[in-house]
Length: 111
Image (cartoon, rainbow, N blue to C red):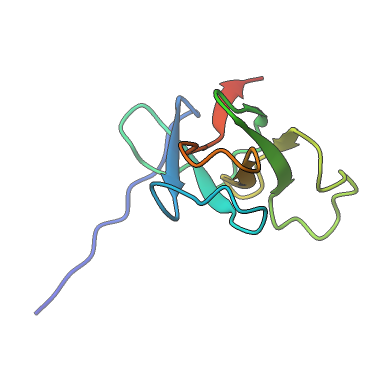
């Protein structure tokens, strides 16, 4: 018979980033979607986390949008900072057009 464990999360301590791909084309149409999860010091997701996350890109690219899934949020999509909603934030980035050597992923800075 199978079982499941439930772990109560502690305070937010770590940001986990997961990009939908490792590299993107600099063709003006390709984007990278990066999901950010707020975790406690033990790596347990913090489902009620609402920390403000600021995004920057290092290298030839830019953040084009952020979102958190909160239907009551009035923060514009092009904003480079957004509060987590249920412990999650999404950033969308694109490389500088014409740069074939570009790869870009948002890097959150704690707010």
